[in-house]
Each structure stands twice: as C-alpha cells, then as structure tokens.
Length: 605
Picture 1 (cartoon, rainbow, N blue to C red):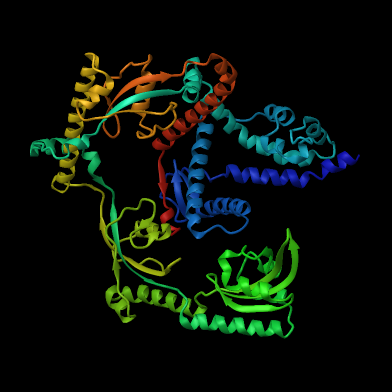
Picture 2: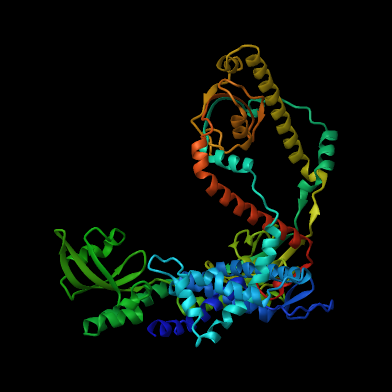
C-alpha cells in the first residue's frame, strides 16, 4: 500500500514533466489560417500561409525564457533576449513546416500505438525521472509498471497519452526520412582511420610570397573578364547609416559624495547598536552576500589579495569591531569581524560587510534619459545637430553598415537598435535605448539599397586577386620543377636546396589533427595519407597558403584488432550522425522552398 500511495503522489511530478516536455518541443496550434488574405495586423509572421499571432509567439517566448531562467538561476542578460527570441522564431517556423508535412503525408498516431508505447516504450522524459529509477539511476520497468497499473491513477496518465499523441507523428516522420540511411563498411573503416592511423612526412613549401617583387601584366581586359564571371563576389547588402548621441549615465562627484554620506550614516547606526546583519540585508549592494547578512566567510591573511585596502585593518581588529568605510575597486565597505579561529596553524577571521557601490544616482540617470528623450522629440522638428548642440554635446555619424549580427559602428552590438534601423525610413528616430554606456538617441541618416558594386569601384580589388593568382601559378610551376628533379633521382633535400628552399619534417599526425607549421590544411593532410610507401613523393599540392611537395617517412599500418574492438561503437555513432545530417538536410531544403514572411521588426526592437 505504501508503494501504491507513493505512486499516486506522482501525479504532480508527471504533470510537471509533461508541461516541461510541451514547452521543450514548443508544439502549439498556430491557428492554421490559410485565408490567403493580407496578414492580420497582430501577426509577427507567416509560414506557408499560417499566421503567427503576437499572442502565441509571446507565449512561446515566455515559456522559453522561463526555461532559461531556471537553468541560469535568475534573469538572463538583456543582450541574450534577442538570441532567445530568434531561437523561438526558428522553432515556430520548424514546427509549422513539420505540422504541414505530417498533415500532407497523413501521418498520425493510432490508439493502439499510443497504448503500446505507454506500456512498453515510455518516453525518455519519464525514463530519466528518478521516481522510475533504481538505486543505480537506471530505468526500472517494474516501478514504472506498478505506477501504470494502479487502478486509482488512470486519469493521471492522460497528459502522457496526449503527449504521445502529439509527438509520435513527429517521430514517425523522422523515422521515415531516416529509413534510407545506411552506413557502409568503407565508411566505418575511414572513420576508424581518422583517429587511429598516424603518418609522418617531409615536405617542401613553395610560398607565393617569394614572387612579391615580381611584376605581372594584368590588363583591363583581364580585370573586366574576372568581374563578369564573378559578379556575385561584389554584391553589396543593403547598408544604412545613423546619426547618434550617447548620454552617459555615470556617477558624478555629487553621486559619490552621497554614497560616502550614506556609508557614514549606516556606520553610525551600526555603532549605535543596530544589527549589522540586518543593515547588510537592507543596504548592501553585494548580491552574493547581502541575503546572508553580508557574511563573507572565514579567510586567512593574504587570501583576499584583491582587497589589500581593508585586509590589514581587519586582522588588527577585535571580534565585534566595525572597520570602515574602506574604499576598494568595488566601492565603499563597512566590515565587521564576527569570529576568529586557528586553521592549520594560521589565524583566520570571519567577517561580514556592507557594500556601497559608486554608481549613478537616480537623478543622474534621469537627466541622461531626459536629454536623450529631448533630442528625439525636438529632432523631429529641427536638425539633430542643432538640438544636441543646445545640450553641450555633438552628433556622431556612423559609416554605412549592414544588418548582419546587429553590430553598429561606434555603439557596438545592439540588436534592438539594428532591428529598428533596418525596418524604418530615412530621418526616422528610434526609441531612446538604454545601453551599458548610457542612453542612446539616434536617427536613420541614409540608406543604400542592395546592389552590385560597379567595376570602377572594385578594379583594384580584382587586380590584387589576379596578381595573387599569378604568384600562386609561379609557385606551382616551381613545385613541378622540384618534383621533376626528385623524379629524376635527386634527393628530396637536395632538390629543395637547389631552389633555396628547405625540406622540413612533421611530427606524427592523424587525419583529423593539425600539422605544426601547416595547420589543418585538408589538401596537405589528404595528400600525406594518400602516400602508400616510405619515400613515395606526392605530386605538387595546392594548399591554402601555397604549394607543397610531400615525401612519406612513416605511416602506421591498419590495426585490425583495434578496428574489431571499436567497430560497433563507431558504426553506431556514424549511423546516428548520418541520420541527423539527413534530417537536417531535408529540413533545410523544406525551409528554403517555404514561403516565410517575418514581421517581427514591427513589434520587437
């Protein structure tokens, strides 16, 4: 009976697990509005005609944010919120596309399939729960079956059944797509050889830079021909520029003086007998210790090397004595010695502290924000430079920049501002933005549409590319000459010295390793492992930096015993990797062909 009672208590556990599972897969009903009419004004996007409402998207975002907070143990930085929102958008797009595919292929989960899975193959999210595990933290089917067969717990399993009804079609779709994935014996052997076979070579490197002083006749016709054949290289994304001013919200001398006065007042209250720990909980700005009454624990002299300013005073103080205010890089400290002890022959003290940071006051922040607000409001009626000058500041101007990762010249990474800048028109002001450096006011000053750079603008770049190609060609010609010398009987070292080059030798390396002096040049590594016998010489190899000639010095043989021992594990890993890649490639193709409209810039900055 005790066991059955305990299993009934699992109701909340199971429900919580399934809630988390639904959040993790973000399986929502996105409305399936296929009207084909103009998108609703509250839609953040459309995926294959399915409108994604702001409400549903915000719900998914809030769920994902809750997960991040639980993992991080608190709020995540503002800079990460755009990243999370982008993740949620990608999940929404994926979910809608997969739902439509499941509908088109008529994939569903029959009742008997759900019952079979429930009794014989429970979801991993249940198998990993401690309530259904043995003392070795392994899934215990007997425990699980006991809970499942409890006649009084039928309704408790309805969320699990619904979870399986929602997720099984996705599993079946993935299984159908992966059904054709096969791993051959050759693939397993190649994977084994990547990490289990070593080689060592001598090599001669012909550096194209040896021809840096040579002149090359690059005609205008050659430049024009290259431009015509490589126009994609010169496509320029849409670029924009802004005028902006940053009003720093930094502590003033007056702010610092106020903090000193506050520290003195709290010191007086502590000296008059108020509880130091309670004062720390109210006034300390050290989040790591304030809830513990400011307790920093025990430490010996020299342990707090960052705070030499007050360590000496503390070790001269008596238990119960208050030291401070003492200034450090963090701010002002009031410290109280609460205990002393001997540990391994050394004196240790226990102390509590109250930290007062030097930061901008509310008044200072409000002034900076008000100035930024004034610029935005007044700037709509007259030139920004004029408004900013009234406040004793000057306007900064960025060069043209692309949307990219959200980086703005002079400002740094600011996805919110970037989203606004690339979604509005010239002369529009963005909302005042609080950044780590202060309050930002800005206006869009110019827009340059996506275009292909004209030939005149890129002639110099093309000429440089063609000269580099000519130098590489000359390096290849020299490598061939050296190869011919070796083929005609010259030693590898002598052939190198004849052209003022050097034959170097590598340490042993693997197919997926790096070669000292060469790096991870795949053509070099491929050529090295392509040599079969000692003293074999490769043909000239065009690497990333220049041409190489390689001579094999040693190569470990195929270890059949190690292969047999590792084969099964390698095959399983390779098969799983190929399945994941097959699904990822299929989905990438599905997404590339899908009609996806993203309106998030209208709602989130």
